[in-house]
Length: 212
Image (cartoon, rainbow, N blue to C red; front, side, top):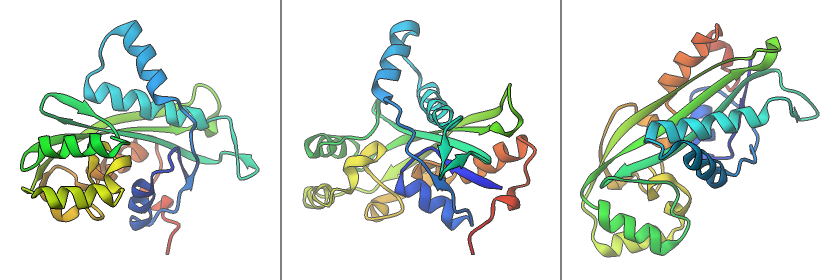
């Protein structure tokens, strides 16, 4: 069974590879900001789990019906999204160094909740397509960094393109004191949740193992 990952996130890709799965990664091409703005204009502000699920579902659905590697999709399609809640504010990727620095100064020595959304589709049976999804959360507690460490971390470029401006599986790992919840949730993909969703669709988890 092949898994199609509607994401180009290196962290999600590496997490799946470490779990024995070599997915086919495809950029979903979703305008996330426009989608969230439209939804909130119609229905009001989104809570963290609603936000990550909205985007995870949109990414997965964007792949269905497309040809990948010269042919139709033959396997499960996974979409994911993440956001970090700290100090009462919800944050995605900071993108700019000054934004990342501001966030680190605010969360330094503190904690926050990393929400990851998951949407899994089995498009092989035609319509209606079988689909399941769930959002998970993990609480992250940070070490107290001095400003030179913060500046060096931001200068590395790593925090700019990840939710919450930190990683757990790379340069940011030493700055994390503790994670309460599934650690892979912090990477943007809860493996335990994904296994549950795969099984809900009637697929045996080991059937996804294709990496030796």
